[in-house]
Image: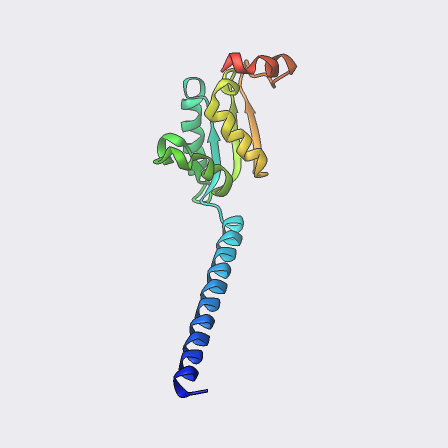
Length: 149
């Protein structure tokens, strides 16, 4: 084997080692981000509400939570949502507790229902605060849902 072939093999080996190190580093960084996202959430609470019925209550609740200390951060769409495409990502990755302000019409709001579904699928701790007129869905509601929304 001549010197030129040896140099080529050494260069190829070094390049392959660098690529393997880069791949392993990227995988480790991704795993670390995933673990950190599970441990540290940007918001302690996500306030899911029907704007017409409970927007003022949501604002009051956020203000009250904030007065309890800096760790009681709350996501309120009118304050924190700058990109609608990220809404469900906030629910699934950035929130410890999902709070539903259960008004009579909340289950007819597509975005609210989407937030609830994501919270359920991602196993986010959920609290339901019921308001007068709120009812859990029954079979009749489920059958007629496509007409109600």
